[in-house]
Amino acid sequence: MILAKCSSYYDASGLMKEMDDRERNTFEQIIHDKAANSLRCIAFAHQQISEDQYEDGKEDKTLREDCLTLLGLVGIKDPCRPGHSFEWGRCVYNNIQKFIQFQLTVNVAALVINFSRVQQSVAVGDPDYEHIGCSGSSYRAACPGANGKKPCG
Image 1 (tube, helix red, strand yellow):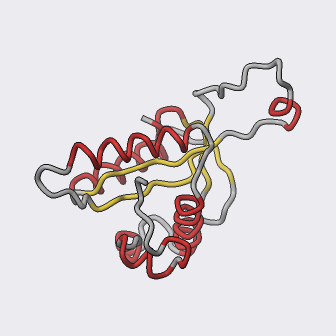
Image 2 (cartoon, rainbow, N blue to C red; image 1 turned 135 degrees about the vertical axis):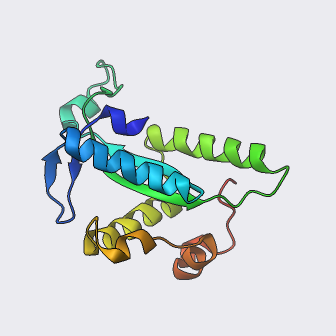
């Protein structure tokens, strides 16, 4: 689980803060609430590295997995119909693997950026917080680059 590997997070104002047990429990509760509402929850995190570390071809480019910074949690409505869940799960797994390898598609990057903008305007605990999100069709309508493209292809 990504949350267990995070040692910090960004608050609603965009400031990075250390994650203590209280904040970790808050994020875990958000994940459980999304699961209770039949949403698949995906956590986005990153780790900053120096330019020297990135450009040095001799150094191992794997990231430490214990000091990630949580960017956000996204609840995705499960669009699966009976018989399609395996294929959908395989697509999600492949896309997550691409994300971990920093090969984000423009559409996924746009979704994360757009979600982050909305997230910054609403704090955890506000009544509107539970209603943040968008359906795939409304996202495709709002993002011209996403029109007509399959999410897994």
